[in-house]
Length: 115
Length: 111
Image (cartoon, rainbow over all chains, first blue to last red; front, side, top):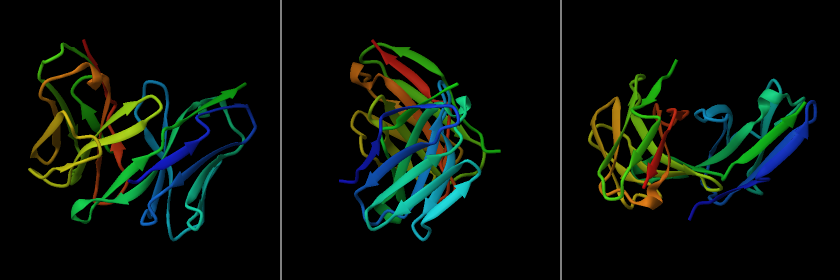
């Protein structure tokens, strides 16, 4: 079935360093790839997304890259700050019954940014 | 600003009890979802609804049912709660194939 693998499961960086989280998906029909950030005790919130017709998208300190051939996509956070500490989830769309799409989520990456 | 609310933040139930988790969204979204979140497993889809009274099974529907009588409200029902249903339950809504917005979650403990 559909699967999204996410690595690493934990990531510890110093403030100001960059952080990279990688995901691999299995369904070649996937065409939408959102990233969610979940702070401790809070709901997941969308931070950036990319569609399959684009190879890269950037929003200030965060960027996402997509390699459709290799079926992987990555989140890049530059100049990390302590408030970036959270669990990050990647997801890939997958066809669903009735022509709808669902999201398959990765297992999450716990990012810790140390001052 | 999209608002998705869930009826309880924390819930403690006994094995065999019938449990209702409610989700309400205020943005007239057609699609609503129920996920459970477990450490190391990410978010897994339990049920999905794309319209009033319509529902589709997700990846882990066993032991759950849902109800959507009004567009803004989507209920998850555990007919007979079991300890392996102890988890964080997250509701989400979206407009067509757009961004999913999540509720704050309900942490359910089944004793």
